[in-house]
Image: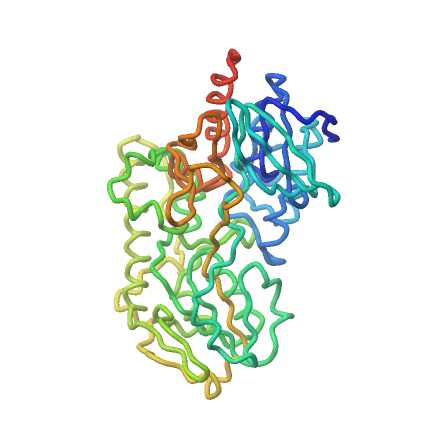
Length: 426
């Protein structure tokens, strides 16, 4: 996987995660001269932002990249993060993809028809030039933590999702997990299983059952083409910023995780964390709203599946009982606690599962909005030859999951080939 010493390419890809490698594979099939630049190692974000027990949330059979097929003996199971990183490395080696690791991209600029990409390699600055650039660095490289976190005393250990590894690193005392999306629920569940006392500051997040009527939920969503909804056809723009539904890939076939299942295991379900100072934490009184929202979303998805089965005249078993997915009609698992005294409750650790943002300031071209986020349509920027891939809702609902990368990579590759004046092979 040693790239050539040339400094001019047809295409430069920035980022060697599943998105960047997928575009590289497609370009390689057409013998397009390109290079993939990675600031760390292949799959760097997967290496540094996941905890030890993390498992993918999409089944193995769906978590494959272009040109590959799942050949293992557990198609309905879920890869660990180490297994997935290994699969990325194997993929790059198998297809001899030109990945250059340990290379920081300092800037992307453009003069006339060529891009100029400044890199730092082994402490030396170099410039690469290309006709096209694909930004596949992801949108999860800057930790998001509320500003009031700095008011919390230093005696309280504060960790972000990317710093949490396992319950063994948590000191004595109770733990407050902030955020109830996939990461928050999974980490809270792991801490409860380790015997920790857990408070969970919830948020407005959907939920789906892990399995329903004999299939994994993602298999149903794929069959129904639910994941195919184009970004420009979304009826409510707020959908574009929704986090992925609560779910877990832990266990042989994964399992459903919900606010009520965490409460049964001992978690105190709080509303959204609103503020903090040196002694107190304050919460909105909306935990019940969050419980109802997740329940209603799950019921809606299950009805969609039932209707699909009926109209397709499919033979599907009735659903098995799933306690974690049973609606909490009265939201009895939700507390009405408006504030917590840090010392009185013995809270020694706060884990911020509050997500990530990204710093794209190194792209010195007019493609960022006022918030510094990339502006694009289906991954195509207003600067000719500059593309983005690997973002949620890049083109469709499935763009944010590994399963969606095949179509997105094919689309971006075709756009690149058209720009390069190369005929796209079938």
